[in-house]
Image 1 (cartoon, rainbow, N blue to C red):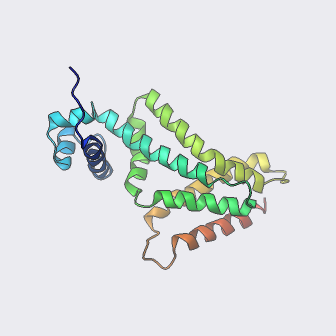
Image 2: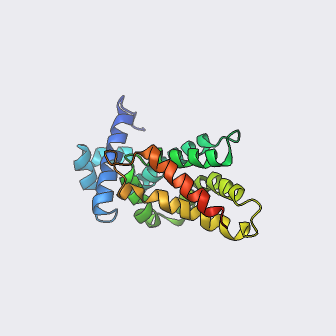
Image 3: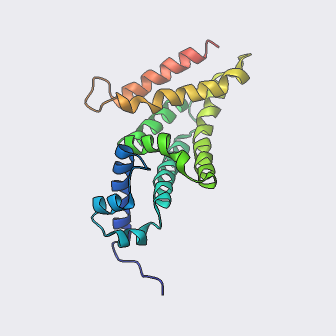
Length: 197
């Protein structure tokens, strides 16, 4: 007979996930055992397997939830009624907002995704591609009329993601530059730069 879910099932599963994110980002996926996850989440190892059948499922759930939320935020930021410059600014803010307090998930995405089976990697890579599409569409519009549109659209898109993805290493909430100011800076810098091509 299947075990029934407890009232606090979702809360405990989230606690396991949060503690796993901390462990995976600090120690690495392979160096973290399920026993360590159980201890950090204050559950028995037996109970842990009630929530996640193995460490692979746990890693996949962390990354899948992270990317689904990011995709939802990026898609919600798309507004064709705005100017192309405003559209880019809104997308940049959506990405920066989503990265708030997600440094650990971002590091796990960068360093641990490749440890999953190919089929699960493909699912997550597909989500990553969907996140890129709205930004790529805006970059293509910014390059409209340029003879180099087909050459620079993709590199331009990936360069923008590179700029945004790594700002969590140095952009601080209590710093001289607010997130909004940084978004405006990147938007202007990128638009002025890419239009020269």
